[in-house]
Length: 178
Image 1 (cartoon, rainbow, N blue to C red):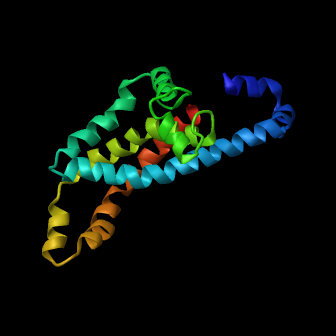
Image 2: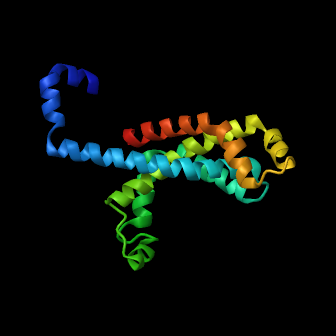
């Protein structure tokens, strides 16, 4: 619908509409939001996937459940829960007021909501690839004397870059779509 409407307006009218201050501010905010979500997803999503696939602790199940939650709940219900938790009489309002931060109806709230709905994409993509790869290369590097950070940066990270990239593309699409 957006493409059809844009084509009907013509290129000159489209450029004029996109040059309006409100449109420029919306594009700037959306770009910043997706940029923040991409950086946080790359870091937290990768480490969440590693916990899900390499850890044998009870936190593994918790991370898996939290990664599935935004995919199982409708966006309307997520928004309602966000308001119930952070709204005027929300359960977390005393904590937020004590910290002196504004979350609901602010850019920070947009970031939190976007992270909540996009983190599963990166976590799941990276976790699927980590499961497929197994641990043989990482174990071989450790056996040859590599430290855990060397194993991560020289073995694991190069292998999972495509999954991180795919998760971040999906993050950007979902972040812009919301």
